[in-house]
Length: 62
Image (cartoon, rainbow, N blue to C red; front, side, top):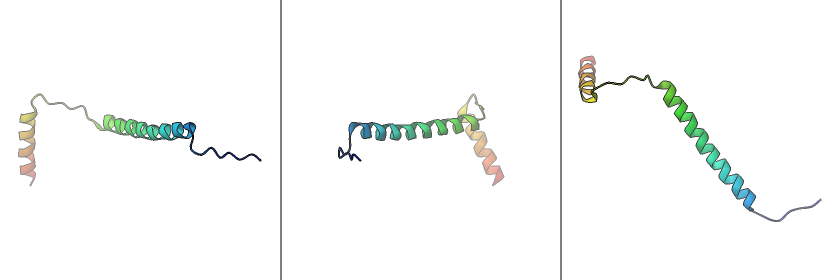
């Protein structure tokens, strides 16, 4: 049986870096999917007027 005492090699660093970025990319893709699937696509022409209407509705509900 042959044992290797090389320690931490360039291959180990490549695998660790690839695993790290693989996890980061997977999380980003997952979050982008959930963001895109939950967005209603509703766009208002004037955001200021829409926010004022929202505030009036919220105050009426209180």
